Image (tube, rainbow, N blue to C red; front, side, top):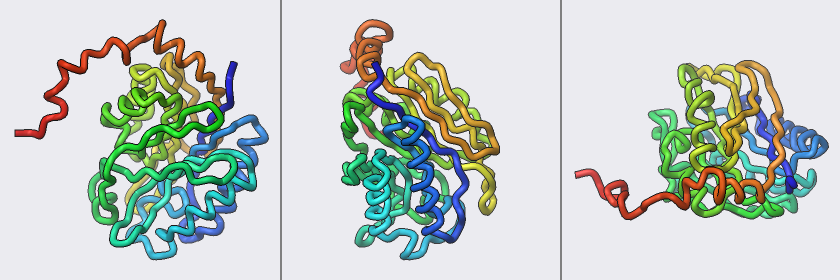
Length: 267
């Protein structure tokens, strides 16, 4: 029996208006809650936009995390969403996990930076984070380009994640990622991948939309390329645990002793 449901919000932020984007996040959180979702995943840098050039102090302020936490507490739904975060001398492309009571449970900092759009503005994150238990559903997170590497998703699965939330800003011509890589990540790790993308155009970047929630059996619920949308899928942790043990035991059938070369530095 499902413990809850994960929602993915496909959207285009209002550029230059943090307050408007926070209001839209709150409105969408209420809608997702009313439709039965217990967790809402929003895109990468969804409060600012992604391809918008340098980010000012207001767009990277730590109090934005507090504003997101207040929305979670007010609406009663857990949030996983992307924002820019300034801490001391570093600026991160971050994903924050907030529970339905408004408690900030984790902040992940993107580890695999994508081209100049990331590297010109952000520092690379120090590493993955363990999944967070949100009312019986263990949720991990990575950001966009991270999911295109198999290792972060595998680490989340080995740590017991039922859902891997992926705020993203995937752009043309990389629709292949949405259509093929995301379902494979879900199947090979026997978890749900909730991949929340932008739509529209910013600067020289056109986003592909096609947000997707991929299930452990490889089936998907998808958005189109152009429309704002809210996808919702129920999550049954017991079924995931059963599948990992009895149906597709990739995690237990691994032979880690053979994989030492994967952890060695290139020579």
